[in-house]
Length: 293
Ligand code: FVH
Image 1 (cartoon, protein in one colour):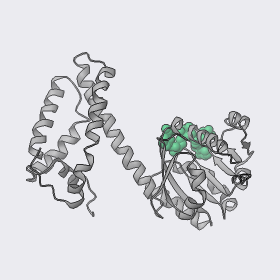
Image 2: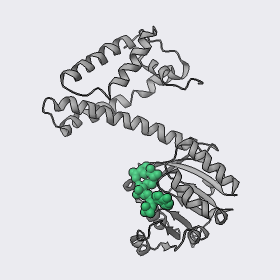
Image 3: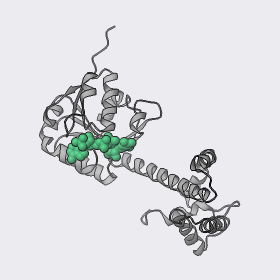
Image 4: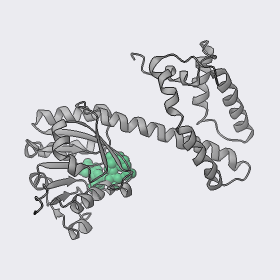
């Protein structure tokens, strides 16, 4: 039986991500129209079968699905505001990194112009797009997610978190916060090891299995965080305070700056000072959670 023709897709923004998306849409058989603010980035894509639009208006009118991947929230408005009329009745999937509130603002803007809006966060680098580890998180219009799910899954796994357009972005930034703190922790350890002449590459051979093993223990602390019951009979905050204080002293002795470890010490110290030294390390969450929660 002959295959049904794939639906057309427009990609706005031919940075590293937009180019990777376009390659996957073309590979999946979708007629794909591309546009970029600065001309000259579409040569390789046109050679692979993409249609180059001369203007953003032409690009938008070419498809019912418009995938946007620009620098930031401001650039999305700069690009889309002038073509809001042409976008009416179409689906916009915005994969630009924005804060949750910026995503909600864009969803409200889209609703006001009769545009069906799905926001997304990309948990991948451009070279991972279309490969199994690439994970894309979506929230906003369920209709857009359901209708265009097969095309979106060409980019990586696709998970939908509900109608709140800000939720995908909240997940995205929360995951990135964890990632950045892990990398900062590695840098701190690498600086300590440098004091003894150990190269970062050699330290990484130890750090990767250790951090991987520790990451597996994260779920064990989630019940305490979710219930607020931090009772423990192992490794109390007092125990962890002694360990982190020793790490701070060792870091000072090695001439290593305390910028990465000092906030961890401060979080522990605050809970201990408030009388929670016998409770578990996870209690530091109480010093971080929103006051209204
Ligand atoms: N690259 C990555 O590893 C990360 C992974 C996680 C998600 N991010 C976010 O994805 C967005 C795009 O990232 P990118 O890697 O494609 O970024 P660039 O290669 O720098 O391309 C940026 C494109 O944005 C266009 N642009 C910038 N300002 C405007 C504007 N005012 N109006 C229209 N387009 C604009 C830019 O066009 P040009 O400079 O070539 O004219 C590029 O096409 C981003 O949110 C990441 O945080 C990627």
